[in-house]
Each structure stands twice: as C-alpha cells, then as structure tokens.
Image (cartoon, rainbow, N blue to C red; front, side, top):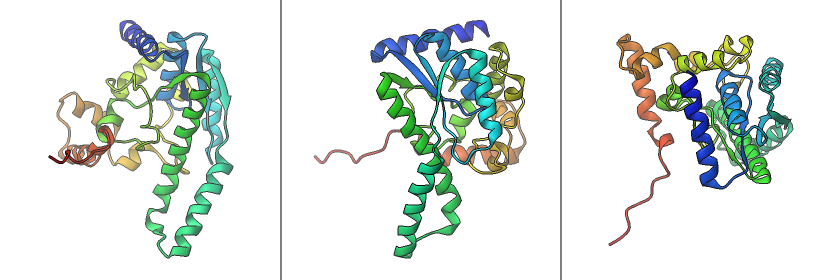
Length: 247
C-alpha cells in the first residue's frame, strides 16, 4: 500500500508539472473517496493543496465528517454553501418549465440531484482558476465502470487518481492514511437527497462490483445489473462525439 500511495503521489506531481499549475484541490464531501484524495494531494503539494466543502441541502453529519478529514490530514480548506444558489437556480428553471407546460415531475428528483453535482463542479473550477490549481476527482474503479457519477458533475474533473482502485482498495488505503474511522465505516452516499445511499440506488453492492471488475464469479442478478449500468453509462467515459468530417 505504501508503494501504491507513493506511485499516485508521484503521478500527481508529474501531472501538476505537465499542466504548469501551482497545486491541486478536491471537493471534500465527508465520504471515504474524497478523504483519500485530500490526503494524496496534500502529500503531493504540501503547501498548495485545498479541500473545498460545498454543502447543498446536505446532512450536517457530512460537514462534520469533512471537517474531521481536513483536521486529520492538515490540508487548507474553505467552505462554499451552495444551498441558496441551488434553490434560486433550480426554482427558476422549474418555473419556466411549468410555464411552458413541459415540467416532467418524474425526473425532477434526478434533475435536482444532478444540478447539485454540477454546481459543485462549477464551484471547484472557479476556485481552481483563481489559484491556478487542477481539480482532482474522487471516482474509484467501481464508480467509473458502472458510471455511478454525474456527467459534468463529479465526473467533470482534471484527474482521477483512484480510477484503478476498487472500493475495497480505497478503504484499505484510507486506513493506511489515517482517515477517521467514522468516515471509513459510514454507508457510501453521494449525499444527493435525504437517506440516499449508493448501494440502494444501484441495486447491488460495491463488494459485488469489485469482484466483477477483478473477474471473480458473482450472482447472475448482480452481474446483469452491473453490466447494464456499464453499457448505459458508456457515454460518460468518452468525449462528446461529433460526426465524421464531410468528404
């Protein structure tokens, strides 16, 4: 694990040099993935790394856990509360859709959640531009394979240092990096709405996804769910397509 951490830290340094930036930042949600990334960028850029807490109708425990992560790893931090911004923007969009008679209430919850993720992305890039930093993402191999991230939201980043690590490996790394136990042991959640958890929303577990990625046998039902998510989310892992040039 020490070699794995050293490898990622050196890679982050190299990417920073290639991009000619001063440092890196990450959105710290109070979850395990962002906690690990906060520790990694702090190691790569001890004096030029930043953790950004962005509550948006979030549970108070998320902010508490985020502050525990920041205190433990010693990274510089700031908080930008996006609740009012989200209420204003989503409210205005809904009013226009209602006026046009095209509001789809069945998709309202997802649209709300995705807007939160994209507001956070916009916030991170605004701060990153101010500091001449890169935005570092938190997606692990399980999330990347299944597309369990918001396109141009938490998927809108410059670097994804955990993309080759399963959720279990991220948890192991978190223990090595002294991430607070409360963060390591909490139920994974994107914090998109009250009571939301990753595994309930996906219909399978990270353990099953990890095993599938590693080529191990899993129940057929879980395999079908995972492969369906992988197929449907292919567009998230690619650049926006364009037509072939006219000849």
